[in-house]
Length: 640
Image 1 (tube, rainbow, N blue to C red):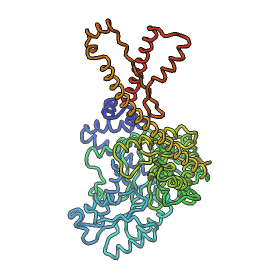
Image 2: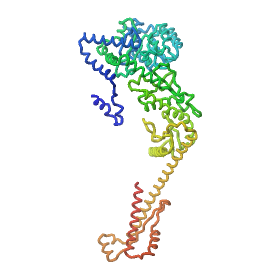
Image 3: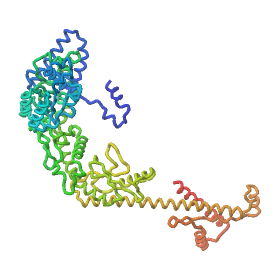
């Protein structure tokens, strides 16, 4: 069955792409989670009493286990496939609590006071808008505040909304990266929510460390929030297990109205896969996986020579964010107008992901910190099988790539100036996505802004030949026709610079490119001129031979052109025709007679061997053969 599914996925792809569609192999824990989905279908066929007893036991055991494991006591649990659905149901619970007519009137109940949702700047993009669309039915009835950078500013926004007759409803905090530790201290946020009767919901990867004994003080305060969402699947490497939202509320009727209590058989059996996986792992297994991920973070000890600015993180955070520093990356002669450090950071992250795929490195965009390279083993290590040796390789690649990328940034402006100095023969082609020194194109002398298709093909051909010549040069810089995802035949992509390169090396490099381009262009002109000369010589030779043929016919007479009569006449009166050969000089492009050549040869031969009828006939035949060879050669040159 798996083989059939794999063939269906790969039937429209090339052979080289089949590896990317392979089904990921799972370990024993993963097989247990997948087994839970199979058992769900079988158990749904039980009678009502047996089914109710089983689902009640599984739900209570799983809820109790998670509450104790993550220190969130006296709470209820909601299991959901979409990790955003728990927040949506919690928001409905708060609406039912604050608006008595919400169950009957829906969003019309908000006419008295518009509800407001506040979102941390470090939360997932579009999360607040998704909640507004799902709960409030009209996006204009909700607002996700993304410009609150500290608690004081957040409180100011809440007061402004209260003065405008609006109702603060929910605050979505994130315990996933440095921004929450720097700006959104969970303890202060909880105090703010209590003061203004708001619901505090927390999510993020740092919540996994609640299972550890040495958790950070900021994450420890998450146990006092009103609800939290746990994504155990990626944390523990369990495929297709549901996310869990733990919440505290005293009224079970409102929980049922908000959809936090399962009613359908499939929903009641949703925690089965997670229950089986927790039974297999046990407390020690779960803690060990989370501990392993946090230990991998401690092994990523960034060296100062990397010229990277590490974003501040909590000491126990299972996530590391780092980026290029404007001060350390932009050296002398480096203009920030032409260099986007965010693009370079993206290129670094993508390069690391290709070199060390099991490292789980990716690129994220944060409002406060900008573009960052993220190392988050808690979300990737269990699924990818990341080990300490993989992190060591990741550090080695960082040590190799960052100095090269920094040198490239430093020399890009010098490369730009040198290319512009050779204008119009060299043109700088803008490509911000290329991580190397830059992209250029060689323009021949006849180059213009608007070219025909044939001329464009000539430019592409010339640049392709120039790239091959550059690849043969002994240099540490690589030249290519473009990145892996697409090539451009009319330009040359210059790779990254090594750490030991200086401005003089860049000048020499560009001079070499310009010199090789002119050499290729001149060689092309030589062959083009030679082709024209040969063509003209062929036409002239054909005309001369045609005249010689007509002259021979006039000398021989009409009777000698008849097949039978000519044989009789030649037997009675032999005719000796003179054959005039032609020689073509490629240097001068002139067509001359071969008589001087054969005359000098005859005089030299006469000193050693007297002429006889046999030798004379052979000489004439030799001349005819030379003419045939000449015509054949000229014909081949013409058609080639």
